[in-house]
Image 1: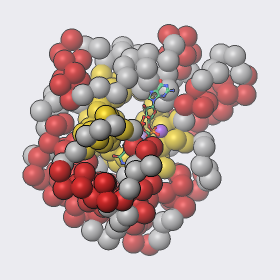
Image 2: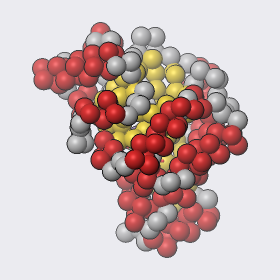
Image 3: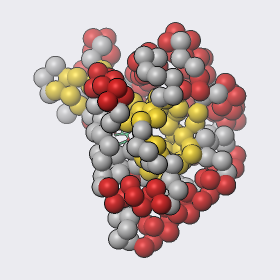
Length: 250
Ligand code: G
Ligand code: G
Ligand code: MN
Ligand code: NA
């Protein structure tokens, strides 16, 4: 069990790291961006995944501070990459509700010297449940600056198509549970095809998550899915290794 006090110390001691998982353009396999994934370099337990401590960070009131560090670090590291390579950052519902969010993002971009169009914010459907006029306003402000907004884990939460109509989403990320049995489960193929068609007509990019096999990639490409992410291309890797992937081209 991890204690709040240990997490507080981790913030002070700067024990967090980001790993990066490539997002590839399905048609040619080229890297077009990365999703930043948070890890805690615990002094005794080693590298801990976010599932082990994000909920605790939220309960302890630390997610704002940690999330701000994530945004700053992700923007700084992305500023070293070629301009066509973007960076996606996951936002906790609590960060989303913070009235200072737009300012925090402005500052992260300015301090890193990163163009707003290279930053993408990943927001889950569950997060969208808790919207109010202020959060909606923040989304539109960020969108107005050119920051991109992605609806993450699409299809798993309380999916409401009205979100797509009311909010400025630039991208849908299809949850990996729909990708897993692609080509074997007829219903999954229908759902994935429908999401891709919907996104296309609404001018949104689609990313398929959890792509693990060449067959899944092939099917998704034939469906017209623009981007993919998953172990087939790469696991989440350190900034240094991601930099090498950018040079060698996957
Ligand atoms: O890295 P891993 O594959 O274990 O990611 C698990 C989940 O943790 C992801 O689905 C993502 O939503 C969440 N996550 C990863 N990094 C961050 C982060 O920086 N902030 C928040 N709030 N969640 C994150
Ligand atoms: O933000 P999100 O919940 O989508 O976080 C992505 C999570 O999915 C990370 O925990 C990452 O390690 C995991 N992941 C990424 N690619 C794959 C994959 O191909 N297969 C599986 N099973 N998990 C993946
Ligand atoms: Mn995500
Ligand atoms: Na996801």
